[in-house]
Length: 334
Image (cartoon, rainbow, N blue to C red):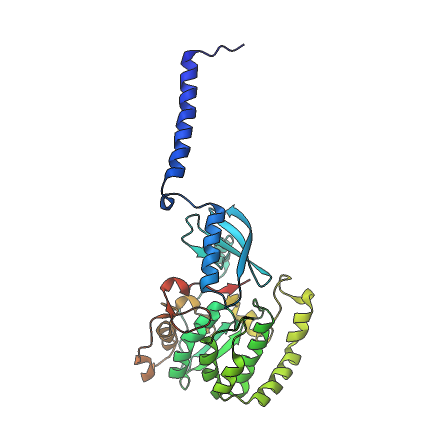
């Protein structure tokens, strides 16, 4: 039998007392000095999403919370679709879009990323979006003042990511915008100005019908184009065939599929200028930020480039207004 002496007992008791005091001190600390629990941090992120990133009547939930790479990882569920999301243990920073860069070092050895856009006499500007992506809407709001300023000097257009993350309503809206731009180009800006700042109904669908009327779009001509494009690109057929969905989760939208492949478009928004991905070249996701990148692509800048546009970051999602700079890094991506 081991004899427990006084000399042994005192250090052991002291160790337990120290541990108890340390635990008590942790829980008595003000919350700002200690990490949130996984549930607390995730609930905080979900509250932000529901208050700022979704259309009226649409509510996000969460599940499968775990600790990963020093963050809380969880599944963000919106309208039956799951998205990977992360939040810091302090609950201060939320990451709705995550990019795995574990293979970045190897890729960097074989792939050179252009650091600037090649200059041309008439720059070609392509903005890839998903029509119901909060950040795609944000980019369209930044794009419109630049389009109105430079449409006669540069070739500018809205294009679409080759999959949808926001259900059938997004596929339908993508087709509408594709057809308006294709056949009634002069109505596109007015329609987008209305659509992006509208207030969706309880079903989450924006008032596209009201915007078509406001922009004086020929609805008969639009309807015929939508039917033809739907058939040509198998939009509804792909939606009905879930076996064709990207990652088994996202229906395809292949209207601009070849361009998506060419420019390696990963999500919404993506800005391509003169065949170069310029998304990260913008000083800010604002009209002025986009204008500066477009104007830098001219061999000789037109006088319109001296016009200073708004430097404010437009509100993500539907509606007018602006947001702080932290809102300009988000995106919708698989």
